[in-house]
Length: 82
Image 1 (cartoon, rainbow, N blue to C red):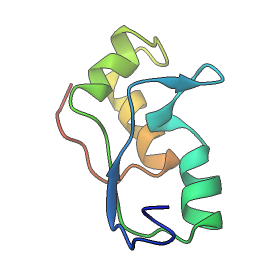
Image 2: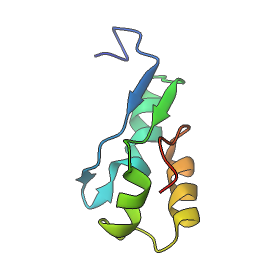
Image 3: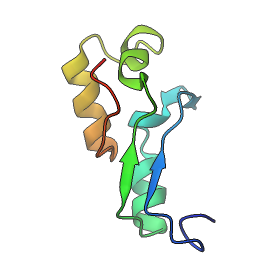
Image 4: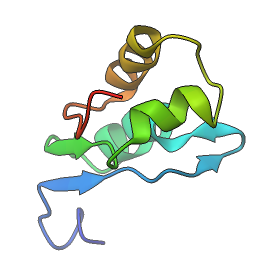
């Protein structure tokens, strides 16, 4: 509602996963947020999320791979380096 009706221009992804996929690399970002809702604003990671993607979610083994996956998913702002 904040995006579709409120005109929000930025939001932060969550640390959690949906269907075992961490939100910062989820196809939901492009498929729902960008395509369905027409969002073209800032999508940032939560603080420490890149490190969490590697250490806790074990989504990838390297920071650069995790960062690339996040960018591909639609992240356009990181709040930290690891």
